[in-house]
Structures are given as C-alpha cells and as structure tokens.
Length: 224
Image (cartoon, rainbow, N blue to C red; front, side, top):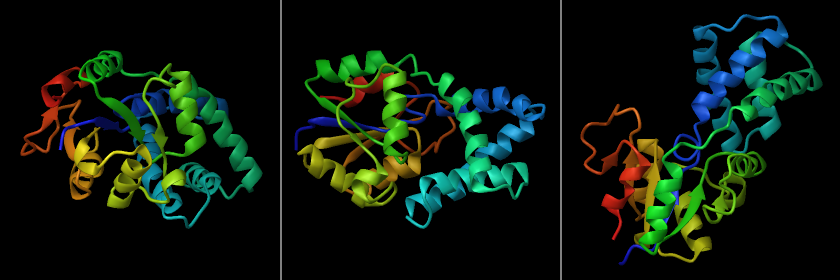
C-alpha cells in the first residue's frame, strides 16, 4: 500500500522528556531540603517505569503511580495528600523544562511536503501529554493524539497501533511508526503491520536495525 501517514511517538521523539525530568528534579530537590546528585537523577528515572507499567496495566490510578514513585524515591510513608503535594512541586519544575527538539519543525514540514498526515501515539496520560504538546507549541501541528486512556492498550501491545490506525482511518500498512524506543515504537509497530523507523538520537543501537536515523531531519529518506 501507499504510505499515507506517520505515527509519531511523543517523549524522546518530539519532546525531550529526559532532559526536562533531569532539570525538573535538580530544581525541585533543594525545595525539599536535598541537594541534587547524579545518583538521585538516575534513581528517579529507574523508579518511573515499574509504576507507570502498573498504571498502563490498569491496576493503579495515574495519581497512585506518582505517589508510589515519590514514596520509593524519598523513602517515606507519608499520606496520599502529602505525596500529591510533593509531586505537584516537582511537576512545576518539570513542566517549565519541557522543550520540543530542534528537529521537529523541519521533520513536520518534510512530512507535509510529501503529502502525508501525522498523528501521535504515546504511552503517557491524556491530560499531561496534551498539555505537553500545548506548552511546547506542537498542539494542532501533529494531528490526533492517541493515549493509553483513549485506546485501552499501551505499546508494545499491537492493539495500541491497530486501534490508533482504525481511529485515524488508515490501514496499518499505510502508516510509518517513528520513535526513539526500538522495542515499543519499532518492533511492536511492525508486529501490528506498520512499517517503522528507529529514531536513535544517541546512536546507541541496536546496531542491526537497518531503518534508523539519528535526527528527525533524516525522515525524508523514508518517505515516498
């Protein structure tokens, strides 16, 4: 089939989540009496995925995954409202650091020039991810946004891709998936019948992936 659409990941692809998370944590820690250290940043990142996975599986709420992450990070048994206030303090700094990557505008222009449409598929929460797009100037420029809450499935479940395509009105074979996580955005997309390109910004592999780029500005090589 002819390629008609490009399905973009959000964090790590359009918006620099990791840099924002690092900057946000380093700015927030002194407000709770702790000096930021590299090991704190690494541990904050490590603690994220298990609790987000539980939320995506539907076993806890989005607010609860935040509480559990904060509880583990600070080693506290504080009440929920206290944990919510602590996380809200971190969010202020995290959101201030949201930035779209410099290559996004050029890539969107190249995709449009090729006559293709775009959409976003993200494993994040609807409210936060739409806010992120708005704050970074991308809202209204990337097409529809499909989230875990909208689809009832998260990457790497092929259903996340299939339901996105169905709601988008495109066949999987007409869609190119682009993202920074090889397992979630490339392998899983291909399992659902989409074509895919790995955005390997740090050139860390996997080396055997033949369809890869280190910048979104290279997207033209994979378009009709």
